[in-house]
Length: 296
Image (cartoon, rainbow, N blue to C red; front, side, top):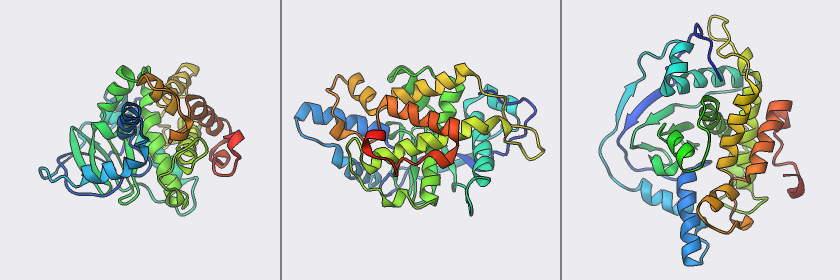
């Protein structure tokens, strides 16, 4: 999506970090670790996917250099967001914050959106490029290395347009909404085609779609819409990204047999369909925990 050049952006919720310290377990993310465990399962003939939280705890237990925290600079307008990926994340964060404040009673925003290079820490463990973007419920913050967008394009075959990038952020923001409603805390580290993990991920896709639908009507602090109306090509861009990180797509790209019992995020088709459910019907339609397995 394209920002209006004169839209004003508040980048105060977004920070840049490097370094790491001890932590715990990631919730609602970790595409990179999941892919590594899928491949290991295939090679060893043993299902290693239940070890994902253990792997993250191990990573979180590493002692590394102290963190460095800096602020985003020169990210003040929609024109800046159109030109720079970090400013784009700041602009999308400002829009998402305003949108969800009007959708959820008693809403509070994520603690931070952390853009990091290489490695940093979270309340859920060490964050690095291999973990992929994730939401940490312990500190209610979103973590991503923007280099992941290159991985998404080069390794997963996504088109890599601006909306595909903002879809990733909106998906993680969706986990925050699931946390606020109490849904996220009820989901364990299970896998399978109708598991709570899959339902949680599809709900986040649905929430992302609902924001995209209304993004062009969300105003900045001066009443100027952050974004221009979304185009069909931009929707296709977001759907392409959603499909690229479906469980079946990840397994196939790794040369593995597609095994639904190891699903944790949903298929490419499901992720696209639930994104469009949110886009067409709003967040009230994101009832992934209420439908039968056959309708999921």
